[in-house]
Image 1: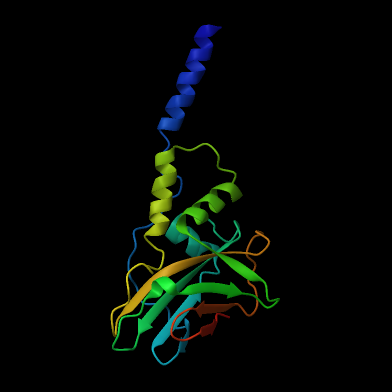
Image 2 (image 1 turned 120 degrees about the vertical axis):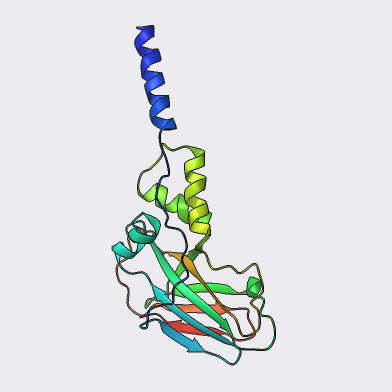
Amino acid sequence: MKKYSCQLLLGFCLLLSGCGSLYKVKPVVTAPLPDDAKNVSANLISVRAVPLFSDEESQDLFGANFLLAGVLPVRVEVENKSGAFVDLKKARFSLRDTNGKEWKNLSAKETAKRILKANGVYAYTPASKQEFTDGLKSYVLNVDVPLNPNDKRQGVLFFQTPDKKPVEKPQSLVLKIDKLSEKIELKLN
């Protein structure tokens, strides 16, 4: 009996150690936003954005169905049209729907945790979870470094639905950026 218990434990350990990445996140390739990306220009800042509303887009980039997990990735491009640096660290990104409900802006770590929980993934190695989180971080819009004058920066923002239910193509989503020199609102659909 003891022999079978040890074999079972050994088999389980081998199974876990053989687990590679949880989700295969593609390397980041900076590509222009599609022509149908919505845009808004203020005096000093211009913003373009496009939500990834199809399962195929999130599967292709991140190896997971974010919409089913209640997470909407939004590709964003911020352009500094001024002659001075813009400190994006102060910026607060939010998303509201038609009903006025705010969608929570998630960090890469919170996004990874949400995807794992929504998909019922509980058996994984810490290294594979970290690899997934790092892959998501590589896509996130970098707000830690000031935006140079007359420069652009792209990245993804992750937003969780207010009720944590799967994303259905909502009407009238508005991306808001506060705490910059100008308040910016952009209708995404």
